[in-house]
Amino acid sequence: MPRTARKPSQAHAAEEVDQPKTPAAFFPSIYRPLFTPARYKVYYSGRGAAKSWTFARALVARGAREPLRWLFAREYQNSIQESVHKLLSNQIADMGVGGYYDIAANSITGVNGTEFIFSGIRNNVTKIKSMEGLDGVWVEEGEKVSDDSWRILIPTLRKDGSEIWVSFNPDLLTDPTYQRFVLNPPPGAIVVKTSWRDNPWFPEELERERQYLLRVDPDAYAHVWEGECRSNSDAQVLRGKVSVEAFEPQPGWDGPYAGADWGFAVDPTAAVKLWIDGRRLLIEYEAYKVKLDIDRTAEEFDTIPGFRDMVVRADSARPETISYMQKHGYPRIIGVHKWSGSVEDGVAHLRQYEQIVIHPRCTHTIEEARLYSYKVDRLSGDVLPDIVDKHNHCIDAIRYALEPIIRGSGLGLLAFYTAEADAVRARQTEELERSRGSR
Image (tube, one colour):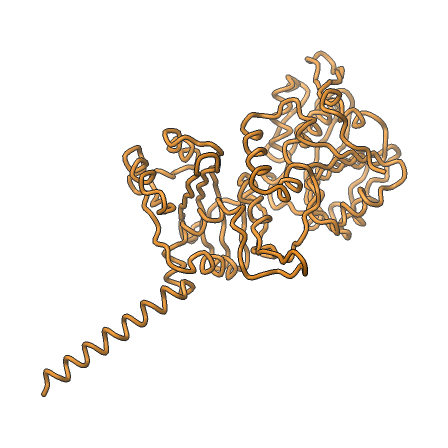
């Protein structure tokens, strides 16, 4: 059976790891098994458990102490920006071991021969199969790894004592990684479920978000923060449309477009910056904060590059907030027009894209895209046509940003038909008056 998270009082203890001529590095005690020899070391949790942060520190410490050849893998990696290269670089600096590493744009090597390699699995099958002498692999975002990829990767680790580290946030019960390591763990595997409670550096900002989701949706909270598998995937509004990839805007793309959704009391305020590339919608930046005071909103929006220079379409239900923002550095912010059925029309518009690409830094947009759902009948389990009014702050901001396109594309059906009927009546009146005048 998998090991479970320890009590917070135990988990907040730390283990000191010696490094040659460097400050000591400290790790939450629940991660001590990372320093115990084992073929498989698997950690899974919800948000805020410091898995990636601690994995990176453990490997940086170990790589400074002994020469390692270590692969850092994920299912898809189109660029080095999608890897943990930056995370490792930051930890090398924070731990004061910069003298032991040479950090290049696409690689990290140690003065003692340590080599950190970064690769996607699915799009680099031949490269993965040919790798020799690996001491280990860290598979990040393991919930996305397919069964075929595991069959390719595991035999690549042939060296005696080589290890396979896996970190992931569970998604579906049927996902290959959850099946392989949690429900049917290999003999001798170290499998640990951790959580935000085991993170001694858990920040106040995440605590506000955690409490917010616990209040508004306990079921989603169990998935997002407690690492429980998500149910009713058929009810996902954007199912099959969303991918998470790093990207840079390209010449010829339409946009950028900007949208904002206002928080109410303890609800989050959200803003997005996005682009359109043919049949793809790409979300580049987000701003998101719970309990955001109105006099701090402009500052939060300024975290999105170029936002002040853009036309920002915002929820028109808060005209006083729009007025305030117009007087405090956002003169081009405007309220959107809403019509009966505008939410459904907006969803239909989003569904028409072949792909909705979300940059990895837009963590809340990614989260909402997975949780935004249709209602499900309590007794029958049938998916209903009504959309649940939750997990839609970033989604609403996206809809607002695209409002003129949604209406112009003909997906604002009620508004479109109303306008068409008005136009027909106007033409008929004009023709009638013209015929009368000709008599």
